[in-house]
Length: 325
Image (cartoon, rainbow, N blue to C red; front, side, top):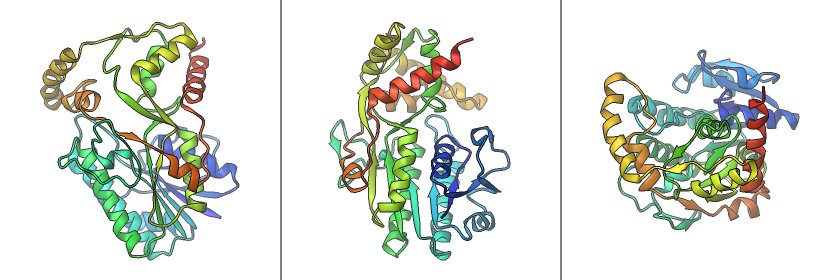
């Protein structure tokens, strides 16, 4: 058995490479020449250098593989290069899917997001939900939906593809929320905002396991929400505080964050800088709420993730061990 992982050096991709290798599966990784490969230390993955806009390199990486796992994406909220995001997330996905069909890959697993459902306004939804939000909260939101539409179209044309829709992906090496946890566990996060924001949580290693199960058991054309549960940020910090004794960060009033977002947005655009708070990030914190039910993945794929408290405990223990002198 041989598998291709696009974005193999990234957070999710590298964990998936390791999970596949543990099962004795030969892995090919598509990575950019500029990629930091430290996540793949001690892996035996064969690397092919290229990008999602380069069909020859994708073809080279894909030739002779049984499974394709498409994890590569431009993931960012805030000030982004919307043109680049369109090329990576939409046209890149088109290239991967069309070449998978052309080369006769046995199974493709596409990494999507629960964000394709749009704002559910706090309602808990499953895979049958039809998006109601007409506009888009971000370029990431719009490009991932466009990519999913390409996947769905090719599934209808016979491509054996399964889509995973993860909620918030957590891990000690998570490049998004991981630095926040590390700062908190270092005792250097006195304040935070959006304590009532509900966040779906899945451990990155459980997502990797879901991907492998999807390749084995997933039905072509199906979507599977991948989430172990949810907590508000306030509940998350309260749990970690109870475990560690580190005080819960104080809540910043929403009006202050909204003002900060309005001020920092133009400054960030002027200096090509990603501010910690922007109008788009504030929107995600206070004005958008997507809640999901992952029963389908558990029943149809036999997926058995660790729960949210186990996830937070394992990650915090890893970070705390790293922080020790």
